[in-house]
Image: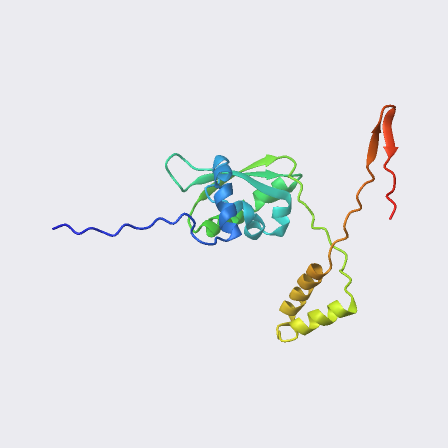
Length: 190
């Protein structure tokens, strides 16, 4: 007799997913179009080549010979005179890239001169000003914590949550008139 296997129930959602996993799924198609089967090389370029070389270079695409996943060519956009420096450090860069992948993924680097995309600088925010009662409330909530770094981080987070942003003032509405821009709306009497 044949045994019937219980049907596996298909769940539509797999529960909660991390933002990094969702971003990886969304960006996978565009990275593959430019030859990056694994998008981590773009995201971790500063870790791979170091802060100096990553400041003047960006990986553009990675191509492999047909039906192979090793021995690829990495195209790198470099600005200014750092191409000569990168050529001198080519063996070190190849070693670091292949160490990142865990196998001999890249055998050759091709340099392209050109401007790099502008990187957004993080804007520093003005420190949040709390009232005395808000400071006391935060101190009371965070006093059981022993880790001072965590306590400072949570204090900054709590300060930004407790202080609401200033609401924007609504613009005065103008009424339509036949002769042009219109007149300002009359003030309502209270």
